[in-house]
Amino acid sequence: SLTVGDTEWAVEEVSKIAREKGGEVFTTNLYERIKGQKSGFVTIKVPVDKFEETIKDIKKISTQVLSESTTGQDVSEQYVDLQAQLKNKKAEEESFVKILGTAGTINDVLAATREVSRVRGEIERLEGRIRFIDSQTEMSTITIDLGEDVEVTPIGEGWRPWEVVKKSFKELIDNIQGFADGVIRFIIVGIPSLIPFILLAALLFWGGKKIYRKIGV
Image 1 (cartoon, rainbow, N blue to C red):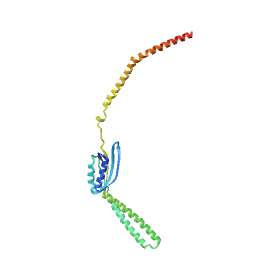
Image 2 (cartoon, one colour):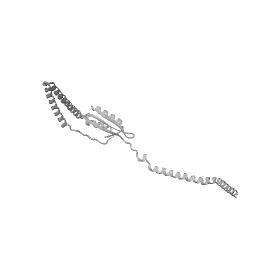
Image 3 (cartoon, one colour):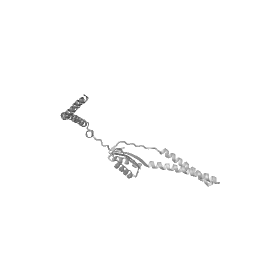
Image 4 (cartoon, rainbow, N blue to C red):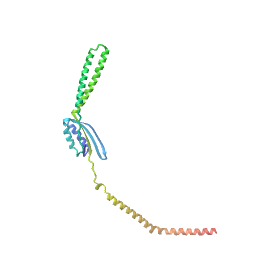
C-alpha cells in the first residue's frame, strides 16, 4: 500500500514500469474514497526474475510505503501429480486407439471411438492445467493499493473556537443593547405620543356615559 501525490499519475507510472519489465497490466481501478482524494489499485504481471527490480521501481513513485507483503504458492507437488495423470491418460489413449484399429464390428468401433474422445478431452484438460501453472511460475503478480496524501488543516488556521465564543458574546450584547434601546425609545417617545389619544378616548367615554344616563332618565 503506497501513498502518492497523484493517484492517476501513479497508475500510469506503475503501468509503464510493468511494460518496461516485459510484463503487462492485469487490472486497474480508480475511485474517490474521500471527497477530493482519489484512491485506486493496479494489478500487474511481470517476469519472476524482474520481481524485485519492479518492486524497487514502484516504491520510487510513492511518498510513503504504508504496508508491504509477499506471498508465494508451492505448486511443485501439484505439478508432478498432473504430469503423472497426463502420462497415464496418454497411455490409456494409445490402448483405445489400438482397440479401434482392431475393432471388428460397428458397435466395437463406436465404443472405442467414444473412449478415445473421452480420454482425449481429459488429456487436453490436464495439459491446459499444466500450461496455466507454467505461466503462473514464469510471471509474478503484483497488486498495488494507491492513496493520495490527505492534507490536514491545522486547528489554529481552520478552526478558532475562542474567536467563535467572542463573536457570540458580542452578538448577544448587541441584541440586548438593541432591545434596551427600543424600550427606552418607547418610554420617551411612544408613551407621550399616546397621551392625546388616551385623553380623547377618556373624554369620549365620559361623554358617552353621561348621554346614556340622560336617555335612561
